Structure formats: structure tokens, C-alpha cells
Length: 226
Image 1 (spheres, rainbow, N blue to C red):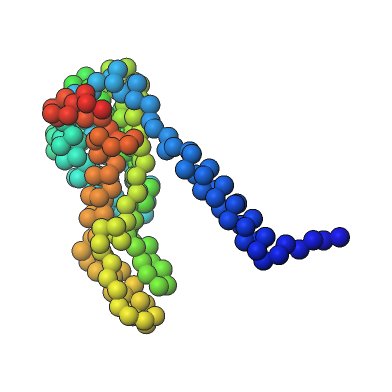
Image 2: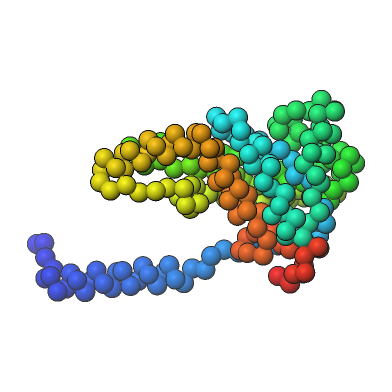
């Protein structure tokens, strides 16, 4: 025989279930990255390699690369100048990010003298159009490789989008939302909002001193305080 709970009993059971689920969520702390290898590596200088582009936008590689030096320098690291890196590879016949990232770590160390290299892959870059709205999304994965040992002391993935960057605006009603989507799409194409969002992605991806981010570099006054 099937027994039906009264409304009062059902409410009490639902509340208990919700409280139990909430307790389970609260009791599970966010996993912290292991920085043992990073502290042992102690990189002072970083070579930023051109990001591999896995998107359909040809601007993704240099849209990201042009904005990755600043957060690293602000974090206390010496960064090999992008122009120097780019010209050196071109002089040696390497013009694509895939070929450059396949150069052995020991060879990169020999040529540039850097302690570590940053390998990045861009997986999202551009405006995604939807019926009601559209959004510009840039997502990148990065890993730091010690050029002296070949070890990988740090890696991270980070997305950012145009809504977070304050690129969207609202017009009342469904017709307004549809118009906004079309107008914003055109505006993004003309002004290349992907580049702006890539800047936010770079800042987040390579930020120092936060959860799972890079440790402060030796040129930072906060070096060794984590």
C-alpha cells in the first residue's frame, strides 16, 4: 500500500534534505593547488611562448600574447620581451605557435636564458550569437615549465566573458533584447571586443597571490609571503 505524506510532513522532509545538502557543500573546502614544485623551481625569468590557437579566429594567438606580459611583470617576474622572442623564432624559421611550443625546453633555455616558459592554449575566442543575447568569450589554458629540469610546477585554466567586462547593455522588452543582440554582435565585430576580454582572461589566468594562481616573483615586495 502506498502511503502519502501530509503537506506538513513533506515540508519538514524537504527542509531536512535541503539542510543536509547545504551542510555537505559547506563542509567541502575548495581544493588548493600544491605549490611544492613551484617553490623548489623558484623561477626568476619567464619566456612567454605564442599561444596555440584552437579557435576559428585568427587573432586569438596575438590577441592573448600581447596582454600576457603585464600581469607577469606586475607579479614580480622578468619577462623576455615579446618582440625579442618573436623575432628570434622568425629568424630561425619558426612562425607558428605549434612549432614554437614543440622546441625542446633545453634549447629554449640555451637561446633565451629564461628559467621557465609559459605554454598557453586558447580554446575560446570570439562572440557567440544567441537568439536573446550574445556574449564574447575568451578561455585559455596555461602551464609553466621549468626549462632547467623540464618539470611543470604550475598549470591553470581561466575563462572570461563580455558580460563580466561590462560590455552588454539592456533595452526593454523581447524586441529590445533581440535588437541588442544584433547591435552588440556588430559592435563586437567592429571594435574587436574579443581583445578586451582576452585582457581580462590574461589578468585572471596569470594573477599572483590568489587561490591557485602564480606565486609572487622575486621582484615583488610580497615574494615568499604566501
